[in-house]
Image (cartoon, rainbow, N blue to C red; front, side, top):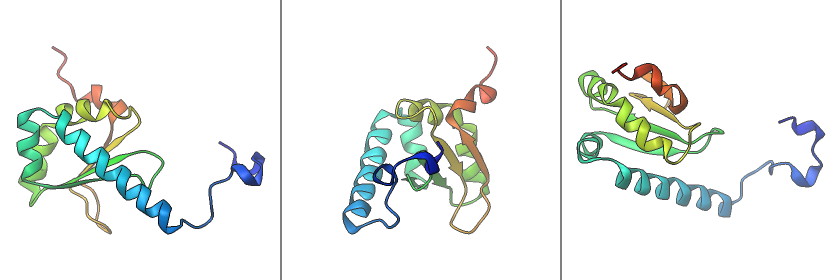
Length: 122
């Protein structure tokens, strides 16, 4: 969307207020709770062994999963189809980032709408 063509009343605020930040946190907490509840038991067990959270800072909801080590990140990646399928219930444009912390490169970043490339053909 071209923001230059919008009237000033329709543009996002230049600075987030405290209320906005609180609403963003509530949205991310609700996404986390509903996502976890929609996952199967295997996925829930996998997530329990990782640090994971949602962020809505970008234009799409992003699920960030940090395994304790590269082996755990690989286990998460091997389970990416189930994770993305559960996430697609909330947003087809969502992303999953595995093995990333602020300022470090991600192990992998996958958009939910790309998940068919990771599915077995049969």
